[in-house]
Length: 99
Image (cartoon, rainbow, N blue to C red; front, side, top):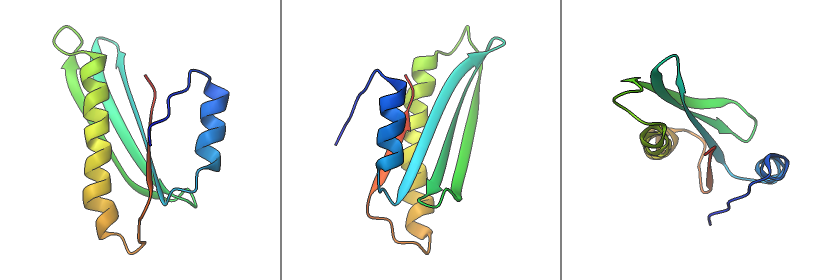
């Protein structure tokens, strides 16, 4: 299922009411001429499963759009590698990103 909302309050409400086993949040940005991305996975109890980040380099050579895509790939990597190895069985996962 894919859900897109333009309202931050609505998005937060949906995320907080989801009963997903794992939630993975991604964020990418440009800051001081550099581009970076991070992904953070949590269990239902908000305990951190895994976090990954990547710095691309100068904004003149990379874009935030590219970082957004890599953020989704980091999220998929976390779900595939870390969550499957976890003692907690994961059946449903949420990937949340801010565009």
